Amino acid sequence: MPRSTRLTVATLIVTVSTALATGCVGSAEAERTPRAPSPTATETPSPAATAAVITEPTTLVEDLSAPWSILPIDGGVLVSERDTGLIYEVDDEGTVTEVAHIASVKHGGEGGLLGLASPDGARIYVYSTGADGNRVERYLLGGQPGAREWSGPAPVLAGLPSASTHNGGRIAFGPDGMLYVAVGDAQQPDLAQDPDSLAGKILRVTADGAIPQDNPDPESPVYSLGHRNVQGLAWLSDGRLVASEFGQDTWDELNIIEAGGNYGWPVVEGEGEADAYVNPIAVWPTSEASPSGIAVVDDLIVLANLRGEALRVVDPADTENQAETFTDAGRLRDVIVGADGNLWVLTNNTDGRGDARDGDDRIVVIPVSDVLSSLSTPAD
Image 1 (tube, rainbow, N blue to C red):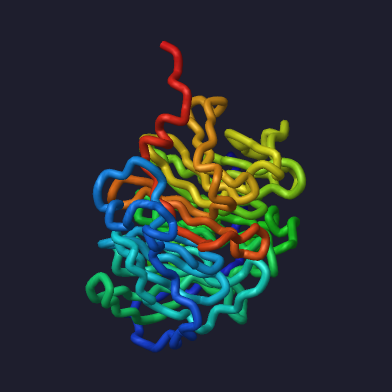
Image 2 (image 1 turned 90 degrees about the horizontal axis):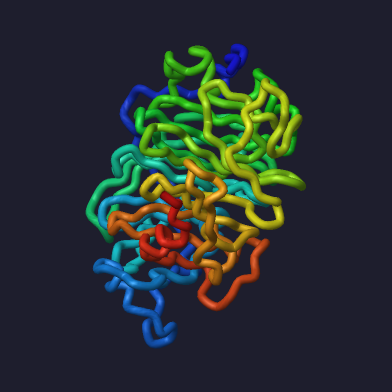
């Protein structure tokens, strides 16, 4: 695959080599606090049951507002809310504790407080929309579960393209220790093919925001281009990066990301015939999917679907082997493998596009066996 041409992006990248600065991130307006569901009211098992083996989907937390990203940490997870700028800690028993309010977040449309990532559970990376565009910032998380200390921010990437839609927002650390950042086309499709723009790209940088020398172009953070709006990033056991992507009118995509690869947008949506572009390994009509967050379980790809309102399971060795499960909770924004080995799923019915029901939005814990058993067994 031809290497992308050199980018002129120095003004958009902030490299930080000093220690994190300690600062106030704003106090939350405590008008609404998510809660663990009442076993009596919901007739579901106690959240404490998730610490043991679960046998059916279990609602752990209710009353989240437009949640976007769920990140495993010691003792539970962190959850971001797009519009409030709040980050909560949720422990394994469903206890919810406010950790931070990112006061500088500018929310509107699909922008706001989006992706969370961490290489070690202590350095927390946050993708959000600010007054000057999208950015990635680093914070420090200390203290004990239920009594966390939060400090920062330190800038990592700044001035990323933003708009009311197509902001990307998913971030993740790869097995190589590098930070991968999905940036949408910011409603300007042609920028996805423009080597001098960071819109419509997957970026790869160090934990401090520097450009790795083994990037496709050692002077550019761009790892792949030709993307419309990547929403999920995860890795297979052999180190291959998989990414989910929203299409426009025809096809949503699941891609294997190659270093320097061009994925075609806006010239191609879905599969094409031009050798210059990398084809997806699976596509779905946009009315049936909107694939968002991704988890990998035993080398099976699990996608949280928004419009599709299901977890879709795909065998990357045979992408015709697919199945849907967990189809009764509405829009699904993110999915991770928790420390308990189960899937933790984030619903997204309060984001302005879903039909919110009593108790939305939720974190639901699903037995991983439900997902693994949903696929057909290949014939010998």
